[in-house]
Amino acid sequence: MPIYSAGKGSTRVTVNPHGSRFVVTWYDTTGTRKRRTLPVKTQAIEFAQKVAREIAGGRHGALALNDADLAEITAARRAMESAGVPFLAGVQEYTRARSLLSPGESLVAVVRDAVASRRTSGPVPPTVEAVKQCIQFRAQRGRSRRHISELSGDLREFAKAFPDFRAAQPDALENWLHSLRTRKARTVDGILRPVGSPLSMRRRDNIRDSVALFLNFCQLRGWLGGGPTAAAAVPRLASGPEVVTLTPSLFAQVLTWFEAECTELLPWVVLGGFAGMRSSEVLRLEWSALRWNAGVITVTAKVAGKVRVGRKIPIHPALREWLAPWSAHTMGRTIAASPEPSRAISRALSRMCKALGWTHWPINALRHSYGSHRLAAVGFDFAQTANEMGTSPAMLRKHYINPPDPSDVEAYWSIRPARTAGIVPMNAAL
Image (cartoon, rainbow, N blue to C red):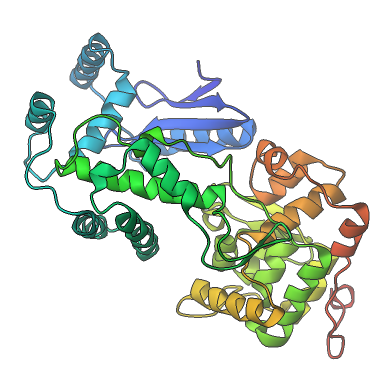
């Protein structure tokens, strides 16, 4: 049962608990079920009320159902239940199946033929050719360049190991995944992993998922029989993403390098490390969001993007000093590098790693560093830190289980820029 419901008739907007978070659910004009997950109950209720008001005003694309529509939905639900298929799962599975077919192709006919034959159809190409067709299939459906590039690399290695993909049975596939080794040296959690080290569990799982996608494509083409593929029988190993934080000394090196070599991107570093903002949020943030007098950064739902929940982040004294040269800015994006700021950041990080002798840049290192040191600085107040970071207390408890030493916390928040000449202290300026 929902803990809250807004709207009238068939245009209900409900709020349901989901673990430590809350899910707002409603339907649009196409009958598509919409969901939004929020970390706080009051935020979820306020959002549900907002959606209900927009539905009532005709601005939210609500699904208006008449008696005939309701009768059809009821009949469909009963038919699925009689077949032992949950209603929502049945709708989702049907939609996914339709998306795999050509326009006008009968889903019933395809399923009937597949069930009747239970055998592969047509000549089965070698893995190299099948991979080529799979990549082309994904590209034609608008998948990103990054997705296509990573998938191509993973499947290229798979094709070398299994020239005939039908030979990739569960045991053989799992043994191959365990045999994979790194081609570059990496430092993980302060430990150097030389060339030839076993892959991380997360990387291994990513390759496993690429193979699973490819084998599903082979089933779609009729080159493999029905049922679960070999990849489905190989378990994932990683329990979650690796969380790497920077020590105060390493963070100071990053700040110093950007201050000297890439000043235009220094706000990206500062807002990540001293405000815990996601990289995507910083790229959308404008200088007007920094309320110097109020001492907060206002992150709107549009800027938040991923969670669509606005929040306010305190402006720490360290952040004030590092952003002092930009304190007079009231317009424009905080990162003005164009036309592709994310690519400019990637290039800068590559240069920095080379200059500092690092093997790579840890994913989300700035945000993770803020989360770890901020949580310790506020006495492990998970709710406060979660609100500042736009996440949930449960996520913080899951990932930040190894707090830094008190001396490191003090050192982290004491990092200041070396420059002093020509800069008016913020207190004096205000």
